[in-house]
Length: 81
Image 1 (cartoon, one colour):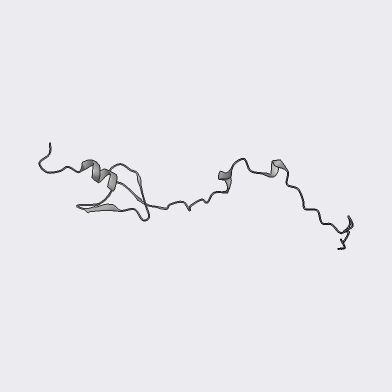
Image 2 (image 1 turned 90 degrees about the vertical axis):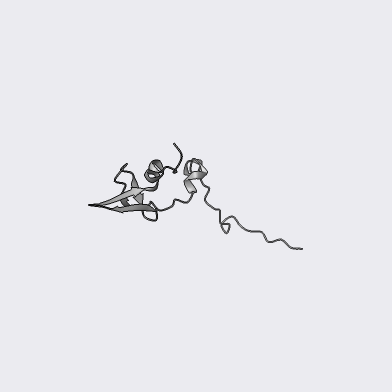
């Protein structure tokens, strides 16, 4: 068996990454979801209602948007005190 001898000029040496080039934690590589877009605000508590969220639209003298949290706060069951 013959072995080929590679001269130093032919060898490609990869660049070595320095420790300062590395990030501090694995969380720097995580996927970031796109930020949610605000559709409107709740007229009771003022919290944002995002695109895709369900909410209640109450039409009285004027239009009123109410989030699910506020509806659940005001909700009562008949017969219970």
